[in-house]
Image (cartoon, rainbow, N blue to C red; front, side):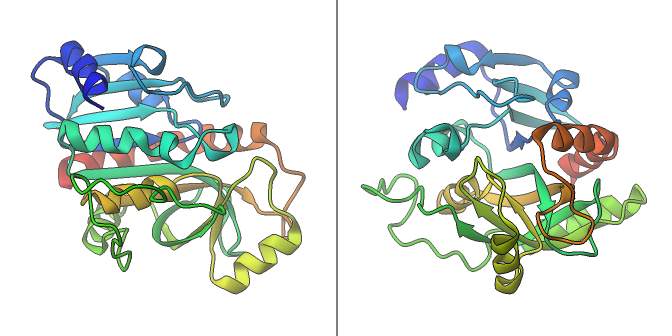
Length: 267
């Protein structure tokens, strides 16, 4: 950890971020448009390179609307073969850099039949169906307690702020529970039926490990999903592809970027 922090701090000088953002599929452009410093994951000690199409793989620092922000321009995923600890390592690094709030974004498939592609959903809770937990292993008390409370990972006051910002932009967001599976295969219709019975509104392959570790570290979390498609077996669902996910998030990104710009100074 110390060599990671030293390398980053040598690059950014006295810049101390207060907000962290993880930019999901199709949203990397937001970092390109707001960039004071950028460091490739390849160059940061102990970081791993993102291999997913649409994920640039950079840590980007910028002052946005008066707030100092660090952004992950692309994330690493469990399905890439990395451990849960490896994919959540950047959360602990951002904690050490100074962030107090983390905004997690992703593309997700709709389980809730009232959702449509390009909708934005504020995450109210999640279901971890990934088969593992990033907190497994020795506990480091400098970050958090062995058995962290998970009653309110996604802070209600942050959702209220995000709702207010959305209304200002005349965006009508959805609210719901995010169901995380390991991937990389998309869920089967039977799995989606199960997710619906369990109370899920949207499904994806990320976010939950990061949210767990952020909450464990005492970081306030806001989660936002861009609904990219109807999940398998849901009314209106078509054959699923990553290209479709990117196409839909590209169509929604103008509104998503405007919403982020509105939320950042308010949290």
